[in-house]
Every structure is written in C-alpha cells, then in structure tokens.
Image (cartoon, rainbow over all chains, first blue to last red; front, side):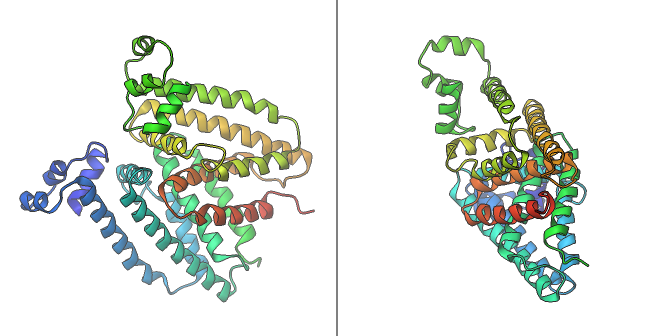
Length: 185
Length: 185
C-alpha cells in the first residue's frame, strides 16, 4: 500500500501504471502483477485500505466534547492537502474521485466513504446536542454541509492558485457554525 | 463552440479528440484542424468563451435587491448540473477542472474564472450591506465560502450517488446564511 501511495504521489492517476507501482515495491513484483489485472483494481483496493484505516481511527474520537471534536474536523477539512498531507496525494485523490464521474466502481466507493464520514459527523452533532453545546440542528443536514465543504476545499486547493479562498472561506464557515450550531454562551 | 460542447457531453474529457469535435462540426473541418494543434488548446478557448458569456450576463444582475440575487445564486449553485445544465456537461467540466491539478494553463484559467465569480458575489454582498438587508459581514470571506460550496456541490454531484447530500447540505447552508448574513427582521 505504501508503494501505491508513493507511485500515486509521483505520477498522479493518469500516468500511473501497475509497472510504476511495482517500481516502488521492494518485494516480489511478480506477486503484484499476478494479483491485479488493472491499475484500477489495485487503486480500489488501496482506497478500501484507507477507508479501513479511517474507520479504525474514528472510535478514538468517541470520547471528549463534541464541540472540540467538530473544531478538529473543521481544522482537518481546511488543512487537507496543505501541511499534514502530501499535496501530490491530494491531487491524486481528486483525480481518483473524478474517475467516479464515469466509473461505477469508483462511484460506489466514494458514495460509501462519504456516507461513513457523514454518519460519523452526524453522530458527533447528535452528541453535542445531548451535551448541550450545540443548538437543535438537524444532524444529517449539518453533516451534509460538512461533506460539501470538504470536497469543495479539496477541489479548490488543487485546481486553483488562489490560496486566499480557503483561508477566507474558512473564516466565514467558522462564523456560520458559531451563529447556527454553537449554543450562545 | 456548440460542437465542442456537444462533443464534451458525449465523450467526456479523456475520450475527447479534435476529430470527435470535428464530427459535431457542420462546416469545414479542415479549418478546425488547421486552427488547433491540441484538444487542450481548443478546450481552453471554449472555456474562455463560456467565461465571456458569463461576464456578459452579470451586468443584468446589477439592479434589484441583493438578497434576491443571493437567493438566486444559492439556487443556481445547488441546481448546477441537475435540471438547467446537462449532467454530462457538469461531469466534463469537473474533468476539465481536475486537469488544473497538473496543467498550468487550466489552473490559470480556473483561478481567473473563480476570481471573477468571487468578485461578483462580493459586490452583491457589499450592495446588500449598503441596502441594509445583510449584516456587516466581510464580503470577500462570504464570497470565498460560496466559491468552496460551489465547487463542492459540483464535485459531489458527479462523483457520488448520494443525492440527499445536496438537498440536506443546502438546507443547512440556507440556515447558516440566515443566521449570519441576513439581517434579523
């Protein structure tokens, strides 16, 4: 999986070949070629692996206050592809996502992965309402807006040179959440 | 330009060739082949034509109340690629936008087109503040959030089968704008 990640960062989606993933692979390349018929098969397995990792990290968030957790999610959303992630990986991820426009398997994967993330955010919102830190918003609707803002920041970051958009857009998103989500103190 | 639009809708970006655009072209194909060396050259001209059209439409909005105009922009943002636009065209547009991840010319174009749209929205916000219908928000920051939500809905629509996201996300975005942007009556 490390080999796939490295090859994706280096070549992007369109110039990627199983051969090039093999070049990053320290062990038997024949094993790799034997196992996968196409790069898409391999990439879908790679995405699946990432989703498993994400699912594994999520339970750690179950404890703690919902408002801190939501602040953390906003941080990660707007930092995505900036510091903590490799920008080339974010590019490649958008290219993979764009494949979903005409490939059923990619669309099925991203639909499922979006639903997992939304479910997790909706759960956090619900906890926040129970903890009394959030107003009585609809958890599903709030999670859906987070989802749109997340894919929006990813697309914006790798397809435009205008870095102010993310910084300024975040400032307004924070204000909106404060106005609609957080309970006035 | 009609031929380029039709060919893009039919074949998407990756399967597009100048030949295929020529097939949609009623007049002299040799003219087309003579004029463009690559499909990207032609597509960048096509995008430029669309931006000119958009710029031409914008002055019509200068009159009228800012809150109605913003409501119209929200409508168009969430309807984009649904009813008024051809969904295949929205797919193709995301593919073109994704090219900006590794092509300087596309990135330059989308940066410029984003800046035009943001400038127009910031102008509308400023008018609304002057008209007394909007609260004292930062026009640039508000326009930046609209930009992120716009590319987010476009990406989400064509890469995921989950139609609820756009409907639900819009409900929360409307609430956020009501809470932060609109002046309480």
